[in-house]
Every structure is written in C-alpha cells, then in structure tokens.
Length: 276
Image 1 (tube, rainbow, N blue to C red):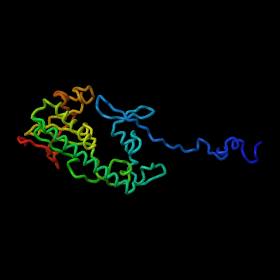
Image 2 (image 1 turned 120 degrees about the horizontal axis):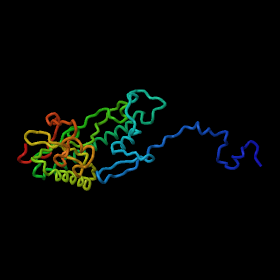
Image 3 (image 1 turned 90 degrees about the vertical axis):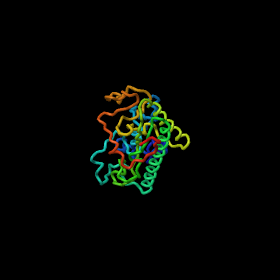
Image 4 (image 1 turned 180 degrees about the horizontal axis):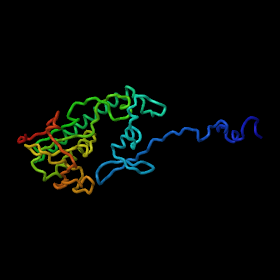
C-alpha cells in the first residue's frame, strides 16, 4: 500500500529522491574528467613518453608536463590568454596563484637550476678524462644567475606574475682535437649522469645535456653530439644534409652556431694544460 504523498519509487528505495525533485539528465552540468596519461618507456631511443588513455595519442615528456600544468596539451596559446579579465568560463587555472604557489614554483625553478648545474659539472669532469677534450664550458641559462620573468605557464602568464626562469636543459661547449671517438664522448656523458642519479638522486636525462663541439683555436662549430646510440638512426633528424657524415656528429638544418655570440656569461668547467 502506497503511503499518501509518497511516490512509489521512494518506498522501493528510501534513499532515492523522487523523480519530480531530480534534475533532468540533460540539464546537469558535466564535470570534465582529467585526461589520463600512461607512462611508457622507449627502449630504442632510451627516453620516456606518455600515451593518452582512450585514443592512444603519444605525448613527449614536455607535452605531458604541459598537460598537467596548463590543461589540454593540444591547446595552443591564443589571444584570449592575453585578456586580463576573468569570466564564468575560466578554469581554476585562470585564477591568480596564491603566494604559497608562487613561492613553490620559485623553489622548484631554483632546484632545477642547481641540479642542472651539478649535471654540467659532472659531465665536464667525465669528458675531461678523454685525451681529445681540451676544454668544456657551460653557457646559456644554467650558467647565469636565475632571473625572473612572466613564464609560459597559463596560470602565471594570464596573471602576469613573474617567477624564476625555467631551465630546460644544459648547454655545454666542448673543444675537441678530433671527432673520431664521439662514442666515447657519448658514454662519458651517460656515465656521469647515471652516477649522479645513483649517488645524489638527481635525475637529468642524457638528451637534456646538449654538447656543442668546437674546433680548438678557431672556435669553429663542428656539430652537436648526437643523442642516438647508433648512426644513422633512420629518424627524420638523420636526413639533414651532412648529418652523420661523421658518425654521431649531428647537424641541424639552417642552424648556425657562433660561440662569440653565445658565450656571454659562460663558465669554464674544465681546461687541460694544453687548452686555450
């Protein structure tokens, strides 16, 4: 017997609200689910990557980081990013970061800068053991004191909040008397970074240490130390004219390197007795 004033479904399930009080399904706002990225590892190229659950789209480590920090990794910055105002369609990332968050980002950037500097010193020391290496110098953002600026991260960019500069990799200039043993140079880089991870728990990938090879005396740019374990690797990068003419000496299309223009603020990490 149905109790007066109570719909029958309420008696069948006392915790279920009556149909009349429930909002129609089409009017309920959907809560967007965060994209799920699955960590993978490419054993051929010796580097991590991510795949998106659902469609299997592949993302690099940098793209995955942007996905977590900025939202959709497919999204390209647009004119709306420069609008100072906020509206009802803005996400939580569009609101001005709290002071604690700003301090946390600054601390993270300082830690990255310090760890990259330690990686540079470790690699320079290992490369200095090779007889063909005459000098190793650190240049770029890791060589200089950190400066503040508006970053690329959406939350900070829209609020025009300055934080310390983000260091993404290490730039090393290495003067070599010959390029016939670049495999040994590769191994010294990998060995130094592996030891840094094992002894100090500081993880810097070998492809995050760019090695620019120069000719002693003239500072002539010879090429960049390749990150692939074999030459040629069969990648698009290997099809650049001149790339691989000397095994493991990588060339970049339309790239010109001038040490005099890039050396501002550089730090010499190693120099042998017969160096410059």
